[in-house]
Length: 282
Image (cartoon, rainbow, N blue to C red; front, side, top):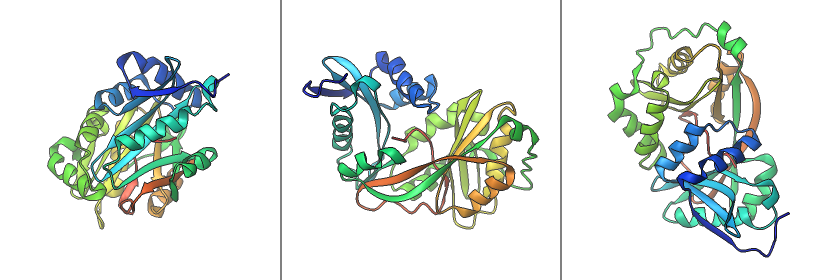
């Protein structure tokens, strides 16, 4: 049982915390792999809360300049109710104090927690999953889309991402492009990246310019590059009805929803974001 009077200290995530962090996200069924946490540690965005010198919770805080994100917020079952979550979020917001806006994708039961810390609801996202059975059956015809490895268009990828998010996400994009290189793809006006390993992969970010004719080909080429025995997930912001319609037609299943909540000024328009990267749920 948590001691409500015990002091909470927050520090950067260390290499020795990786197994603890993964155990926490495994307990929530979030599918974070060991590589996911290693990448977060490499990016230097992880935070750990301690109570009485023992690790009690984790989160991540990405600073992209004008915009920031908080995610992977999870507290050990025996440490809840002792102010650990609030301490983590306050430390994350302090780290992101230079950002115009900070976003978290809250699971529905946690929305009140974030609201109490000054976050306001802005929209929803849907997490879709393609089962191995449907993955094996679907044809995923790329058609005439001129899809190429993302690094063949890397300057364009970085420029498109910076224009969309108003910040420098190059370090994040680089580690994702290396995570699953066969599914890191681009064409004129868009790109898609991925993370994961068997039995589960997650596609995103997937960003396109308005009028991009090959947007569907990016998805289908990325899915076709992954093992047909694996499940694939993708998280789609609510404004993208065309993406939702495509996924439903291909046999993807909506498995849960998150509420986009923002602290500070307005977030960038998500109309051009076909899918966001995972790992920022809370």
